[in-house]
Length: 239
Image (cartoon, rainbow, N blue to C red):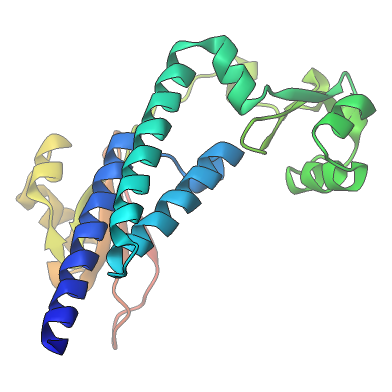
């Protein structure tokens, strides 16, 4: 009898895990830092209900029903949030402009329940040490602060000098943990012979010596060597 209980617990745990995975796929991917309060509360509730299902008790059937209802409600609410801007604003609130043209809006700070010290701390974390350097700062619905510096406080770029450097493009991973990723190497327009030649130019005789290597759109190869006796660890750039 006791063995049956253990097996039933294992089956329930696997079923709850698969169900939770399915719900996460249906609800979509969202980074935790992008959660608003409703997303966070929903995730906690779904996790708690799933835990009740995973451990068989006298109430597990009720937990399954509650989990199903809560999932449907979450999906329904998410549908209306996507379709209705007004409803989305009601549920998620609206971004608040807490600084405009260097002036802090104390009223918006109170609405956001954000103190002046907290605002100044966030600005310093974004390398802004004077509110007067900010053209506007917007507190997003996920709690993040978006800061637009004034034009004369923005860093100078090559575009400001009417100079456009060649695009490096995305890095294609061609070696990971001593293994060549042939598909990525072909996609970058190179082959194994080219890769071996570039490695030999840097004194690397074996692919197994390479921890990671990637090639960008300009054909520059980035190599990170394994840490092992007789091999100097570090980064190598090959043009």
